[in-house]
Length: 401
Image (cartoon, rainbow, N blue to C red; front, side, top):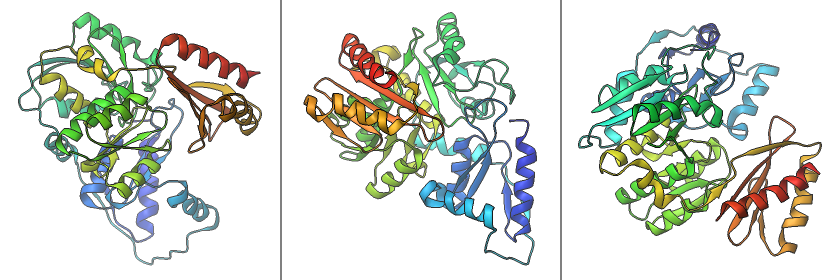
């Protein structure tokens, strides 16, 4: 729904068909609708989106047939080379363009994956952020026994109410107020392309995505005993504990969808979760879907009479700092200093799976360099608020010097 998307999509389709390939246009779509289409039709997919970025941004999100990911090492560098040097492919014919509205099929598929037939009536506030959830949420929730209070459903790529980026708490304030005002059971906030979903409980408190990861993991393990669950290394320790207590195998991953999807394919994992609000499902072609994660939460809420905060309490075991960014001149030098001060010489475990992770007895932190900016990203978790703040402040003092 960004103003520039139709122009880009037309140009992309014209370029593809000029090379002799056929294009199916599915129209307005969330990212997980693209993955659904690429999975069901078994074709590569492309969409024009800038996800949660501000209005002036746009870009192309790509996947291979079957919704398989394209990452830097698995295709993007090849595409970059083709853009710079020209493609070696030389077709002579011209392809065809057709249209196929897949919204109803997408909704049917989601509702086949989560049993919502016996939930009691719920009141749900949904903040679409003027993004693509304003297109998909009405189609999904029209089929459920829920009273929905819509917020910012109007598709508007200028994002007049707030950025469609729910990982930033300031963008959830309107939703928090609305949940309390309407005495709703839960609030849902989607980002611009609706592949991520964040929750607000009945008291207006934000739900940590790791908590939702643990909840969905427990539900998936109840259906698939002994299965593997993927979590990224910024996820709470509670995720690992819940997975193991539920009889599953917890597998740690680098941050990023291409890594998690590949690891899911390699291990046969049934589910994966990230601290950023991305949730991946084996029965959704190992792709991420904010809407499917939301439906799992609604199913858990609608099956019992307890409020969401009480349902989630067993999964909330630690205190997290959230991601804190610091500008640095030399990211690697800063990480070396942190490793020297807090690492093995201080009696702590260290690993370098993704940046630098330091594990203490009741705490851990991770520092990663941004791929696009001169930033270090810090995440800290500890058993208590005081311990988290102490570790956070000591590491930040080292980073910021």
